[in-house]
Length: 150
Image (cartoon, rainbow, N blue to C red; front, side, top):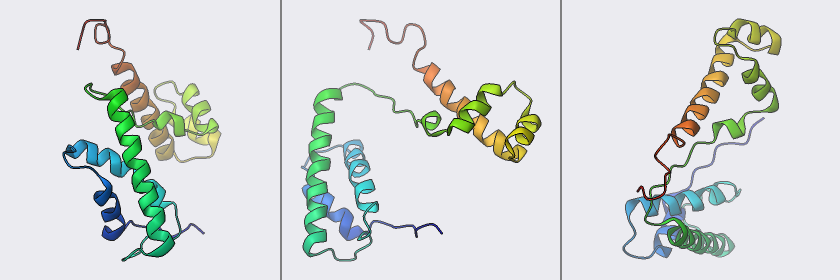
């Protein structure tokens, strides 16, 4: 049985908003939320309509941490466009990586039988793997990373 899906409440999100400095761009606010939200969602207390006590203090600590991380990211990477890959290939299991290594362009049915999966599932896994490989190669096009460009 899987754990029920948790949702961060507006009150929990407001703790982060209160900690963010004025003048942040919308993208910077999004990054701060991306740093903060998974911490909140991983905690069983997530979902409080009005956080108080120890939960409020924990949220404030995570908000401060997200602000610190955002500041560090801005100092280290600010002023340049950065592509963040979804990292799908990283999340492939060893079985999926092995299967993708055996993919030959049209052998979905054979791979499905070999790995005990549906043909549709094999297509989904291979498609995600191919998209990740394509995105990785796009960042390595000739001339884009040459010194003096950008």
